[in-house]
View (cartoon, rainbow, N blue to C red):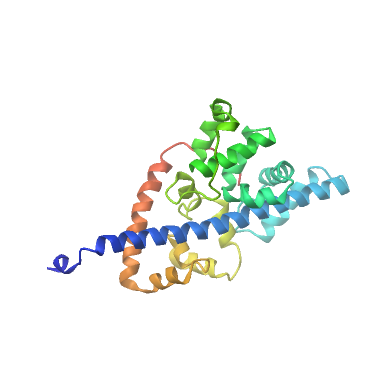
Amino acid sequence: MTEALIPDSYGQFLADLNGRIRAAQLRAALAVNRELVLLYWQIGRDILDRQERENRGAKVIDRLAADLKRDFPAMRGFSPRNLKYMRAFGEAWPDEAIVQQLVAQIPWGHNVCILDLVKAPQDRIWYAKATIQHGWSRNVLVHQIESGRLHRQGKAVANFDRTLPAPQSDLARDITKDPGSSTCASSFLNSASGSPLREASTASRWRPGFLHRSPLLPPEAARLHRNRSEDEIVRAGIRRQDELLSLGRQRPSYPLQDE
């Protein structure tokens, strides 16, 4: 009886809502990722500058790691090893414009892969652009680098017209994956005492979809969450996303240095 009352247009309505929700989630996650990568770049540049001026070497990194962990105990990513990656990241990308327009659009783990596996600056740019263009996950990026995709395809053949990842790509799923996983981005959001995101995460126990309550989302997404019946529709769409993510977690992953 109830199903008979649902209009034929409901399927399209649900599909439209799912598309808007995923797009809003991706925009929010991209904004967080961009800020985190830019922060890491700025830290790396500051470390380089201080080491050059004071000739302190690695000692400043060890001291900085201990002090930052003390000041931000809930935030991951401040191990000596990861701070050395930040320094290498700042050294590899001296031009802030390239960082903002290109490498800040991909996750930190992707950037670490490129730092480790690609040495030539122009080749690093190529793989960063290719990651956005083709929506590569971190595992796929590692495979493409190790198999020499750049040299097999040739630089002249590439036509990179994307500046942001496609919403349905593996890269987008990497950026918007369950905040409950051990990512630097989730701890970055959750580290500020008294922040709305920290309070939301505590209330929701980091369940998938917490970004839908983020102040980064547009007003229409926030209104959807306040409407209980439509919120149930939201969760149905998120469950499908979680199924796709669980398939991706079964594959071996490239280790991220954020201990």
